[in-house]
Picture 1 (cartoon, rainbow, N blue to C red):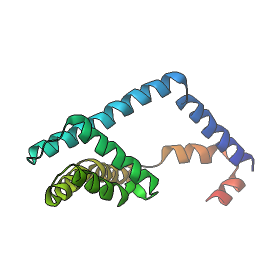
Picture 2 (picture 1 turned 90 degrees about the horizontal axis):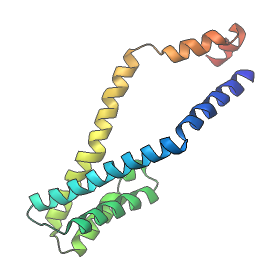
Picture 3 (picture 1 turned 180 degrees about the vertical axis):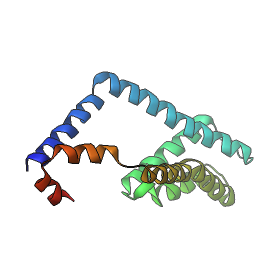
Picture 4 (picture 1 turned 60 degrees about the horizontal axis):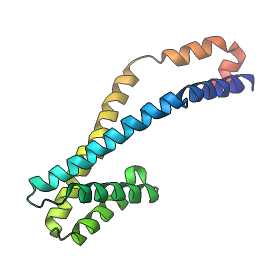
Length: 149
């Protein structure tokens, strides 16, 4: 029980460090930049497919679609984001083939690229020994370590 409390205390200490006003401000600015870049990429993609829409319209479609995906509670907003994006593009007069193509391309460039990157990082991580786990187990009494493992 004491080991679990120590682990919880450590988690809270790390969370406190991440939730300082400076960290929150920097994280918010970086997040705003990243989402803006994805939205701008969507506008560029639509223009490249021969169906330009105003930049603010494309950014709004992208943002609303991502929110709809989040509301669906599916991992990565699968299904909800794509359906919303296609519907909103169709409402803007974009042909169905272009709407579907743009949706699939932007999701491949954003969500699935990140998934692939995560899989690569996970495979690299699994090849290295977990130094954190070793240090935690060294600090726990041997009989407690047997219960953890």
